[in-house]
Image 1: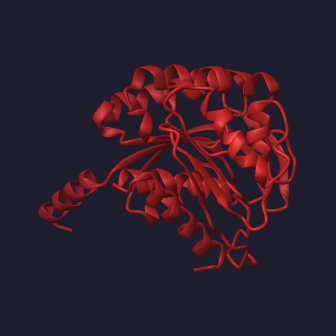
Image 2: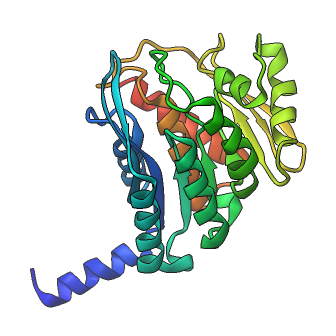
Amino acid sequence: MTVRQKSRGVKQLAREPLALTIAGHDPTGGAGATRDLQVMAAHGVFGVTALTALTVQSTQGVQRVDPVDPGLLGDTLKCLGDAFGVSGIAGVKIGMLGTAAAVGVVADWLGRAGVPRDRIVLDPVVRSSSGAELLEPDGVRRLVEELLPVVGWVTPNVDEAGALLGEAVPDREAVPWAAERIAALASGLNVVVTGGHLDPPEDFLRTAAGDERWFSGQRVEPLGRHGSHGTGCAFSTALLCRLLLGDAPPEAIAGAKAFVLRELEGN
């Protein structure tokens, strides 16, 4: 490769949106930061990471979680912020945080980092799909009180919506009510309640302006490498990518749903 070719490669990279994922590490690549990077690459977005935890898990369940020291997480975020600057980090995806201390570190960094709120997507991971607790109750409280006010998007499934509100969301008819209550927890918050636990799997959007809309979906037999493992991670990351690429919110959600469907179908 010539010097000129290398220079063109650097310039091309500089034109790609750069996004940060703050999430745990899944050794299978089916969820967490590794999955986020895959989704970002598929959308032409360059991804960087700040890990919150190391896990021992597979598509069958989570066996062990070792949180990253909060000081190390804070140093990683500061390092990335110093390296790329406010204008360099176009957006942030937040996944599993693991501890209340990590929630505080991330909220504090975002409050000072200067990334536009409408380009920060929080997937509020509280439990794994196999039922393992991934954020203790104090962490959920701090997430609501400290993190929701500094993000622009939150994408809970029905169970996670219930955890944020402190009461169950019993059925599809209660989803708009839940989205409205979550949106009221912080001003300027767009809420997408994902419908993987519903039949059919429809998603519901409530924008910060109060507009509401259902997005239809279809249940398919997962044929991809990871089955249905990590679909919440993939959806929220794809949503961020679509927003960074210029989609309006409805188009970004529709595009993210279509991306996840293609992955489930093994395409």
